[in-house]
Image (tube, rainbow, N blue to C red; front, side, top):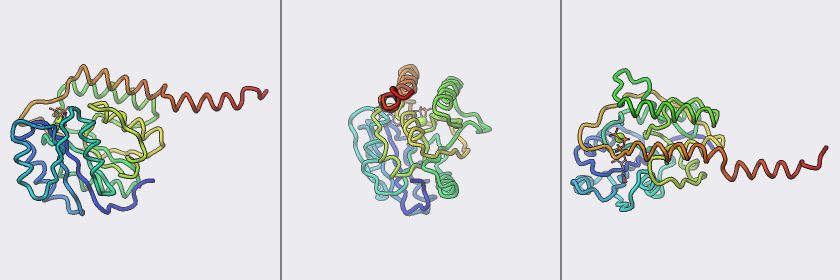
Length: 246
Ligand SMILES: Nc1nc2c(ncn2[C@@H]2O[C@H](COP(=O)(O)OP(=O)(O)OP(=O)(O)O)[C@@H](O)[C@H]2O)c(=O)[nH]1
Ligand SMILES: [Mg+2]
């Protein structure tokens, strides 16, 4: 696996009522990112005009995914992606989309399967305190249970090898999708590194994140991953093979 060359980048952007933010995000990507690319917006049937804005842009592909969920939207977008690299990023203008090229360079330089944008070294500290705290605890648990050294597991801004993502089976429909992806990459031994980026507070619209619901789902994903069938099956097979050996 790993990434030796960026042939084409598919930028996948989930949107749900991001009319105030989406235009700036996609035009910045269109103007800044010089690699061969496609920009795919996966909209959850927004009612605020997001769809109309994206429809008018000839450099964007619009996919409507009427089923609810951040993870579902990303999965649908990725299924339609043609690039050998997939970049996932929010359409809410909070991530520094100018940094996509830096992430891609890092991906090739380090020959890894995923580069995450970490917001933990951002001097502006634009992340809200509760999100920061939740993210910290989740990230500690994830690093501990899966022997990783990430600082921002909840970052929704990632460059991923298309081949690698096709090799893992992702089922989470909502925010836990981001964590499930990391768990399954870690289990396959895929390499993940971070690049430090800045973060901005949301200018328009409301967050769709429901902290309590997502927190429960994320922790259950982390603990389920530890006891998952494949882990148990591997251990059981090992035990069965060796049980009569003395
Ligand atoms: N298509 C689709 N997109 C969604 C859905 N839920 C969230 N999104 C989008 O996914 C991205 C992440 O959701 P946000 O609401 O920004 O969540 P967040 O980043 O935790 O919250 P903020 O701190 O306010 O940015 C945004 O671009 C949303 O518009 C959904 O059900 N369907
Ligand atoms: Mg956001």
